[in-house]
Image 1 (cartoon, rainbow, N blue to C red):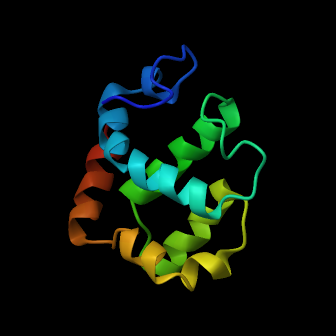
Image 2: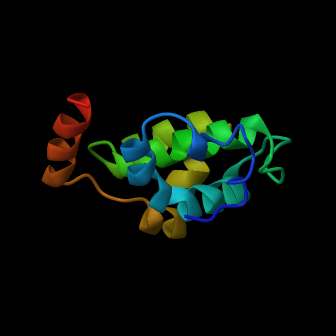
Length: 115
């Protein structure tokens, strides 16, 4: 996986459990898109910062394991975006990109908890 912050020694793509990173990495384009569109923080255009990387990692983790409804998923996404939840929930494009919770997520959650 090639990403704009891959080469930084502090990148989340180089730390932690490899299998978990592989689960999260496919959600990086959506996380970057959410940051560009909805984030109000100073670091939103600076992917080399630890703040951006922490937000990207957090967003990927939420997108990988969405909550029981898109509304609840949005409520968790705004924690990392530093914005109001209403613009996310009222934006059809955003709601379309946010994955829905499925029974397969329960099986993945069990597998991860045993790692």
